Image (cartoon, rainbow, N blue to C red; front, side, top):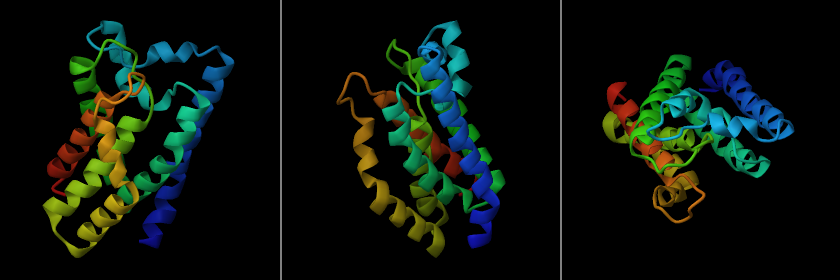
Amino acid sequence: MVEQLKTNAPLILGAACLIWAVEVVNALAGRQFDSLGILPRHLAGLIGIPLSPFIHGSMGHVMINTVPFLVLGSLVGLRGKRVFLGVSLIVILCGGAALWIFGRASYHVGASGLIFGYFGYLVARGWYERSTGAILTALLTLFLYGGLVWGVLPNRSFISWEGHLFGMLSGVLAARLRGA
């Protein structure tokens, strides 16, 4: 387990650094990258599917997402680099596509959908795999981040609850497709 953390740490930390670098450049550029988020049902909004996890609406937004990204991403990464990359790809593409089809007509940005996807994957993996390690990881995930579940409800107009919901559902799909 420690070896997997060491092996995957550069990948996960590198992704977090990339998210921060994009935010700094976006802030310096007057938030011009925000229009590269997912804009549902607009062709131009399709570019946001792979880009939106790296674009955030503010420094506060990226700060809020950093720790859960590192923690949940590391827990997913315990299964190996291929699993981490595979789960990330499924969540970004499937969650992003569902958001593009069903989301509100607004730009959706941030790594929250990916974070919710990791959450959904880790909990669902416990259900599908039913091994001691997977169940303990699911319980740890629920203990640390169980409150995320409330983020799939429409409670604030400026929060993409749809991105959270489709991210979580895509994480569950990733657990199912990857044979948990």
